[in-house]
Image (cartoon, rainbow, N blue to C red; front, side, top):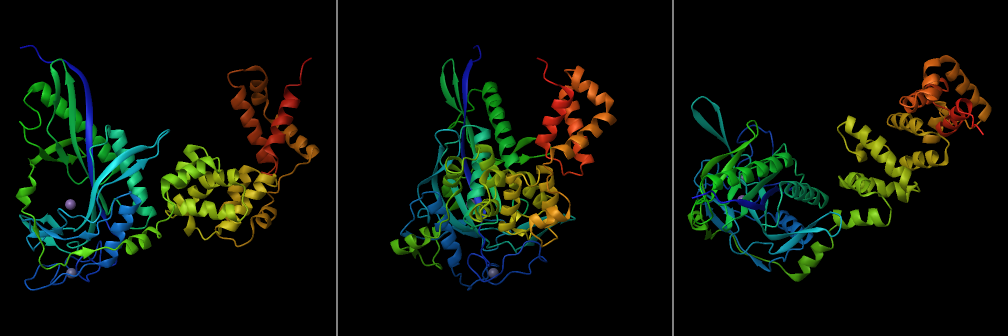
Length: 494
Ligand code: ZN
Ligand code: MN
C-alpha cells in the first residue's frame, strides 16, 4: 500500500505548570521553606509522614491560590477539598501526595496573551494546590539518598486546555504566566531553583490523503526553562510525525500515551514510561484535612488585592503613554521596572525620554549589578530629573549615561553632577565651530570619505562627530555638531 500523503499538521499542546508559592512555611506543617540548607534540616513529623501526625492547612497558600485563580479569570470554588494521590517513591515518605482531585480550588478560567489584535486566549481548565516531593540524590556510589527539605512545599498546579498550537506560542504562554505570578507576588518563580516547572502535553493532528489522524499524547516532564519548553515541543512534534509516517497505527487510542523527559544535551525527548490513567493514582479524600469553604466576601477581599495585571497595563502603556509595543514589553518585563517608571512619571519626568533612559541606561546599570532598578539606591525623582534635563537639552544623551553612573554613588542632584562633571551642553556656535574645525583639520581621511566616498560617508561622518564630542569632553550638542560638519564640508551648491 502506498504511504499516506501528509497534507497538513497541527501541533496540539496543553500545559501543566507547577508554581512554588512564596509562603514562609510548608503546605501542611510549620517547617520553613529552604533551598540549599543542609539535607533534612527542615523537617518534622508531618512532612516526614510519621503515623499519628496531623497536617494543618497553610492559609497564605490558600490566599495565593485564589489570587492566581482570579488573575486567570477562574471560578473560585465555594467548597474545595483535599485528596491523597498514591505515590510510591521514597521522596514522599507518606506514600501519597496531598493534592486536589475532583474539587480544585480554582475552576475554569482563561489567560490572554499579548499579541497584535486580538489577544490570544488560552483557556485554563483548573488550578489546584498540592505539596511538593523531596529530592532523591544519586551521587554517592550505588545507593540513593533522600533529602526531604522540599517535601511539603506548597505548589499551585495550573492546567490549561489544549489551546496552544505552536512551540513559539507555548514559549510565549510560559513567559507571560511567569510574569503574571511574579507580578501578583504569589511566587518568586526562580527557574534555576525549580520554583516554576512546565509539563507540556503534546500531540499532532495530521491531515493526510485518507483523512485525519491524531498521534498519542506525550507529556514532557519537568522542564525548567522557557527555551527547553520551546525546543522540547518542536522536537516532540517532529518525532511523533515521523513515528506516524513509520507506522500509521501510531494514533491515540491504539498506541500508548507516554511520559517523556527532555535531554537538553542531546536535544531530544526520551521515553520514560507509559502514562497512568487517573485510576492508577487511586485518589481518595484525605480524612485528616477538613474541606475548605470559601465565602463570596473572602473572594471579593482577595480580588481587591490584585494589582493592575501585565496585559491591561501593557495596553495602557501603549495607548495612553504612547510607548511602542517593544518598549512597553521591556518596561513591563519586571514589575519593579514598570512601577519605578510610573513613579518617575509622577515625579514629573517626560515619558518618552524616561522610557528610553530606563531601557538604555538604568536597566543596563541594574543588569551589570545583577540587581533590579528599585535596588540601585537612586530615587525615581532623581531619575525623573535626569530625564528632564536631557529633554531640555541641558545635557546630551551620552552625558546622561555618565551622570547616571555618578548618581549611583553620589547623592547630588543630576543637575549638580552635570555641572561638577563639566557636562552641561555648550550651545555656543562659535565654540562648537572651533571644535568641529579641529576635528576636520586632524582627520583628513575621514573628511575625504565624508565628501567623496558614498559607501563610507555615513561611517566617516559618525567618526568625525565622535571626534568633536571627544575634543569637547562631551559638552558639545551632537545635533549642532552634525549641522556644522555638514555646513563646513558640504556647502550647499546652488
Ligand atoms: Zn514539616
Ligand atoms: Mn502535580
